[in-house]
Length: 115
Image (cartoon, rainbow, N blue to C red):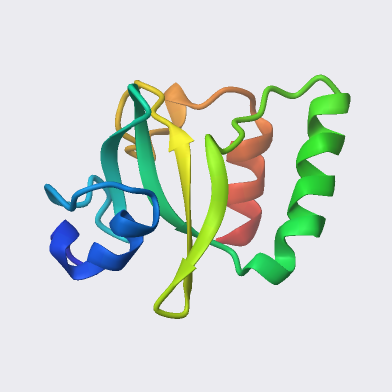
């Protein structure tokens, strides 16, 4: 999926009270940087609402195990047969698949086994 315009997903923006603006910040799925209730955030597609209880259980289990997790700023909304959610924007560097920057050897070992 090339970088898409927000106007292609206007219904998703409207579902959260936002005005479509800009281009996706991610080439493989529509992810839009937005301002939601005064906070920098991203609007992105997510799993179907039917999967929400399992996803919530998994997220709480990770959190209970001490793993830092990001949780949505607002409940998911369905528009045009797709589910959308807003997460806080987290500044960082762009993913580039460069192994020396990855933490831990397990990622590298798993990658080598899959080749």
